Length: 153
Image 1 (cartoon, rainbow, N blue to C red):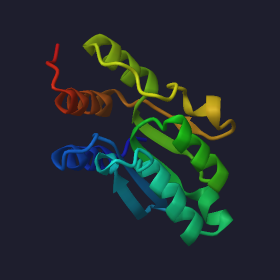
Image 2 (image 1 turned 120 degrees about the horizontal axis):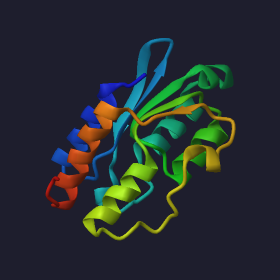
Image 3 (image 1 turned 90 degrees about the vertical axis):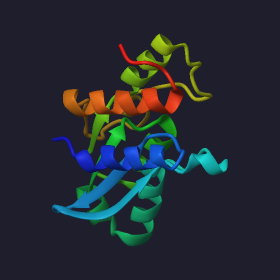
């Protein structure tokens, strides 16, 4: 159940000089909140999934949060997975997986980040997490290549 809007937000982030990640919160078919990475300002917690969790905690009831769906260009990092679980959000659909991202970085000689790459359910058990999406993950890979200045294969 892919949602291309998250990848478009990732593209927007890249265009603004940020890391290419984007996420959308949907409840009963209505887009409630959307954001993109904003870490270029120096705050590395400004991930869109974390912002969604904050927004949901302030604006939705616990029952609404449970029913809300998050669509994201990349599988949540451990910080965002934990925030998602603590706030009590519903299912996650991701275009590309953390495993894919780690593999791309290794292939391109990019060192891993400071936090271990883990699948969502290794951090937040019990959350329905679905992905990656074959077509959208290829788009995300191209965005990551552009962000890191590496050639395609």
